[in-house]
Amino acid sequence: MSKAATNRVSRLAMGIAAVGVATSVASVAATQPASISAPLVDLAALIVVGSSTHPDGSGNENFFGGMFNQPPYNAGDDLEHVNFFTGPFGINQALQAHSGEDNAVLSSGWGAANASLLLMALQAKKDPALAKTVFILDNNVARPNGGFGTRYPWFALIGVNPIPSPTDTDALGLVDVGYMYDYNSNAPADVVNPVAAVNSLVAYLYRHLNQNDLDLPVNEDGSPAVSCGSANTCGVTDKGDVLACPDAQCGAIPADDRVAAYVTQRGKTTYVTYTTKGLPLTNLIRDFVPFGNVIADLTEPVLTKIVNSAYPNGNPIPADPSKYQPATPFSSLPQLASTLPGASKTTSTESVLAASDAKPTTKKKSATADEPKPLTNVVRDSEKAEPQSAADEPSPKSDPVVTVDKPKDESTDTTDAGTASTETKTTSGSAAEGAAA
Image (cartoon, rainbow, N blue to C red):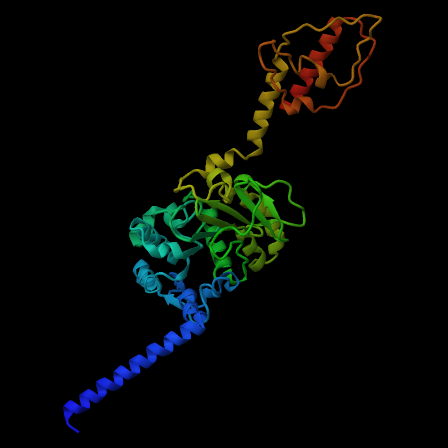
């Protein structure tokens, strides 16, 4: 057979095969439309980003019980690891390869700061991949209130992202996970507090790669999985109860329970902050120092005060985790001074003295022989200790130290108003002197 004839036969065979394939696809689509549409709907990818201490990120897909390592983000073979050293560019390359699909980007530590930087770049150009992608920033170095990259911006000199992660984006969802005291996501604001710095490093070592066992209280789209009414923050206890905790301040908590995690939503970002059982530094003492429990029991209250003084408002759990809070060197000393017993005592003494020196603005009715004056608690009811105000002025509140006092035994035979007034002065002055002492 000639070469021309061979080419004609080949083209004819290819044409017949193409018609056959097209006919088969059309037939299957007509009889079983789900077989054609399902692959298009199920397209997804879980993109796992490595960290500086675990560059390839292998195994991180099991974080939080593997809640993202399953449909809709991983139907079986839709898992892709991105090496930490490829930075935001490597993450973007993986994401763009799955553009238009339902994606989840799971990152941790310094890798989370890289993912955060990419997120801002995609937001700036309104990338369509954002609308179908959930970003999980675990132990986020770029957390606005606590990440060591944002807390200490000079780490940008070695490539750490110093820009706080965004709060409101076009992404399908954004989950920012932090850990109490951890150097990555909850670094001390006072950089010159050595006790707080050591405690943060210990917290990091205790927490490192323990995320597999954590229950992340969010939905698969990144929204909060708990609700607590109108409060801006929910507290989830060890027993699974959900408490209303406005500004991360909860009400009464049962003695046999504790708040294990705080959940706050700002914009489209869900902030989850896990707490610690005890101070990491004293936990280390308990685990490795001889007679550690005895030493830890004695030192934990003082060490906790010193460590907490290095955080804004003396609290490592931020009232608003979305608020940018850079370092505040030497802030521990005034914060610690405000919590000392002497500071509160001075304040109470001054309040007592001010209350005892106050003069009443109205006269007391004179007691007569027919109407004996009842004397129950002179300090509580005395107008010298708790003066009345003028009609056009609000009544000042008495100091709690003044109002809480034991009643004294006094004669009820008093018939002269002046004598009653003198006794009132004496008792009030004694109360003030006792409080001042």
